[in-house]
Image 1 (cartoon, rainbow, N blue to C red):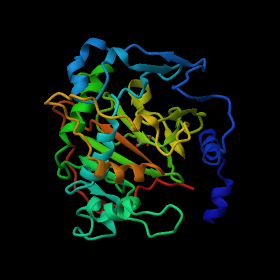
Image 2: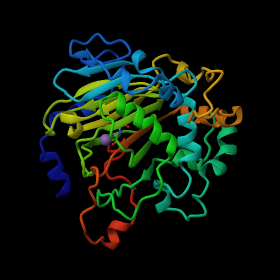
Image 3: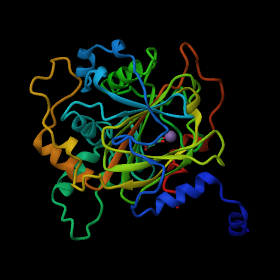
Image 4: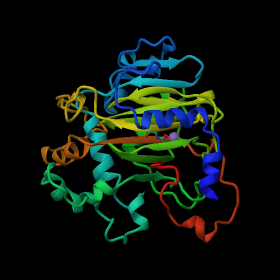
Length: 355
Ligand code: OGA
Ligand code: MN
């Protein structure tokens, strides 16, 4: 019955393109936007709020001065802003290391928590680093815990079952990521943005993220911020309905995407992870050293050679995406409701790795 139902269901325009890009083997399909060489007619440069972020605050967050950012919009997608890699040389490494070494620590929540004891998931980095360093790419080896990681949640922890955030499931949001988010939001015209929930997605070359809308946040007037690191991907941005055909674009390492206003609640998906277009194991923006004299109050910490070795190994076949959300409007609180037992359990994200 289920199979017959699935066949009978007509494939919508979004799903058709999702399946196309999931299997895409290169070649240049028309309409695939690449903001690193923007030629498409629908791409418009977008002017940001230069004076809202001081060069010093940008620098503290590991970002170039806002006046140097290359920001774009898309016709028919008001509120969508694509910022092509605004990071200072060497600074992407900090965020990659945080996503693998720091943000994976308790009390943050990850997909492995449902299968494993607290003790086993307490330090994924420590338990994986030796194995990652000694990996032979030619030989099959069991996966390390870091390689089994699919998502981490921060702040208000998103519950994949109930699709809700709950008031008593909150842990402190990482201050460095709060600061980075604040600067990006300010530059895009959202000076009051608060980073309250984060979802980190860890992708490998065969991963994808299914078609969805992020609507669980209670305030949709604030933007959703997205940061990408490592290998590239194709991102599909659709309409308010599933049957509207999406626009397809590349996301490369360092790229930042802001979904706000009309574009805040649009369908989107990541059908495909692709090796970086330079054809090197790591994109060259990851090879650069940090600025020589970071300010003392910088949130960027130098990454040791030893730690970077593990991160670099991981990123050779992976992409990390950070999405930051504001959950509640200013002085809004959660509606009163009782949580069921089922809702309390953490489950694998239902729309991830759809085949
Ligand atoms: C998400 C999301 C997109 C990406 O986490 O909700 O849409 O680029 N991520 O990984
Ligand atoms: Mn999303």
